[in-house]
Amino acid sequence: MGLGVEHSQRLVALFALGCLLLTYPLLALFNVGGTLWGVPLLYAYLFGAWAVLIALMALAVERSS
Image 1 (cartoon, one colour):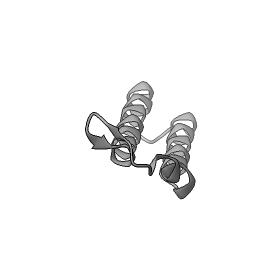
Image 2: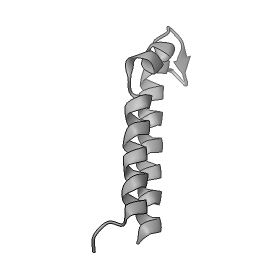
Image 3: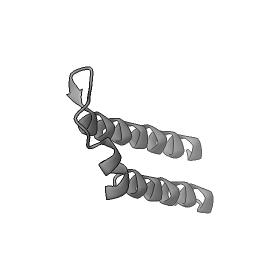
């Protein structure tokens, strides 16, 4: 029932990726006046990055089961 070492490493790597994707330097790149399908680019990036992290986390958890 416990987490394996490889499983834990994947989750830690996903956490680090999430921290990287949601820090100031990358957010500043998308903080421009453009839009994507009518949504400001910064918001689209935030929700897109969030969705990718959730999908990767689901894959990591499912593979270990």
